[in-house]
View 1 (tube, rainbow, N blue to C red):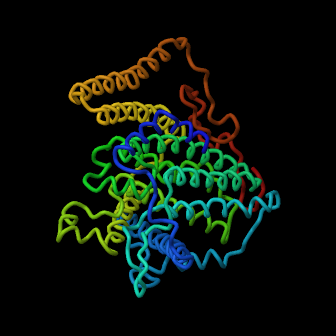
View 2 (cartoon, one colour):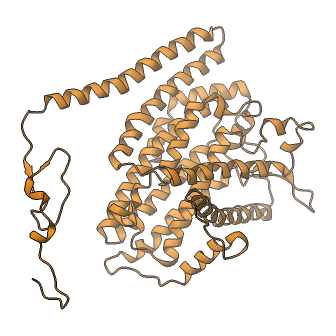
Length: 460
């Protein structure tokens, strides 16, 4: 997966990023690497605490919002407003019996949840929570970010890809067919939508002139990229829902088909780790969306103009960052409470046949606009008109052409009656497949074809 993302961000795009960086300034990451060891440890501990607390809050928040959507009350007993319900559930999971199936590969079965959880926390190492601040009671000034690097966004994508191994190994090592099928579904889903997610970020790299998260936030001082690069923003939001296996894209855990999916055989703390990884990943992709498209920790426009930009200094930006992240968390919950689950083949086709082609066309358009802007001396009106024509032709070929192919395939099918289908041939009612016609015998009642049991257990 890492090699695939590296190929997608190959030489031409990186050359444009370098050119933009030359125009905007240096690409060196400054202000990091000089903190005392205790400051680094303090930052790491605070990130861990923030993510755990956010996970507990988000579980409560999701249950309350979905309950309100369904005209229920939700958690309201443990703690004020039920805020301690998530903590009570965590204690309950810890006290449950830890079961390892007989057919499981014990070592990998135990390692898999760790492989899913640790990368989710590591991705936050390069997320900026705010500008430089002074630590209270000291004279140390440090950024509200653990570290940064020139390829910080690629680091997040690479670390997130490792989490797929935990899901695949967890399903494979369980010794269960349902778990294995759930792991295969989940890995295919995450890889497919991670490609679309990576392509959506290329436009941000081109406009920011850097892959450093702190410099991308600085590049949005005047205008957020979510406004000027709205196609990339929309593609990323769709991809992040598919990347985290959340409804309506939670096909790896479809209860009607795969029971619990890849974690069917897990219990106690190992199940809790998978649960924790899912919610931390929700926060991670939301934080990345805020950093790359919504100005990061910067205050929204009306507040940013108050009193000489005072709300973008000190510890205020941390509140704006958390507020923006919670907006995306609400979107996750809103989608779960309103949209039905998609069919797996429709979901995969949407990723490969819609999101990825649209992303590629958009990257070409953004690269062309950016190259012309850097070189100068070109009328942008003609460029935008040409891009509009190309986009229209692309949409016609992608949507209209596919419908014509489907119509041609339907017309070329031989005109013959489908084979009769008896729903009770095996003794139990089975629904017909698409294109199959049931016989008149299929409407007979179950009692006429199936055996029945008496109260004493004998078969009549």
